[in-house]
Length: 278
Image (spheres, rainbow, N blue to C red):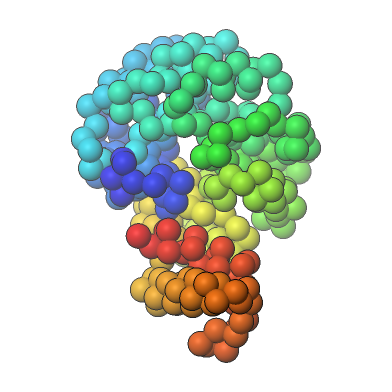
């Protein structure tokens, strides 16, 4: 997916340490829809400033058909310096804020980002518990659970059954605010690709759109899970066409050609599928 595509519906975001020249050199060929050049957890403290410079240089040199380039900044004062440096920089599609929770840091970071698109990593008990207290966010803001940090903050094991309630809270908050559906969290282990695919399918069913990847091998799995099939696209287009024809006649709900009930909720789903299938 090119950098100027609708990144809200990207299927895969691949994390790449910004201070690793070898990984950066291969990043655009991995098949992902977007990259997250990491200045935070994957970078040693002594390399933070150099990583920032490398990320800015990489984004500026990216071609128009390369994956969209996002940057995950640090938290604290260093993170604010990161935002100042990368906001509006050539080729930077967006900035991911780590450990996002309501408070002065997030408000200052959002102000510094200006018109640059932002993503919020929900990685703490405070971030989850205070979802409704987040400030007003641009309508294209992305959200992603950071589940390893979140599990540690909550004092729980990072098992799917224990995290499901918190995942659902994030999905619901995004929907309530009119934000894009959240990006599915990373899977720390990458060796079991069948399990990664099965888990991705579950996350899709739970309301996540696309997934963050920490290894190139995961990209193809995420892309396939979140790609719209031809049959799904044809059915969605048919529903939209039927709905618009009935609406023009003053009919709000009806039985579709396949026998299923069609109403405004159904057509919202259909339109989202059409948008992802373009």
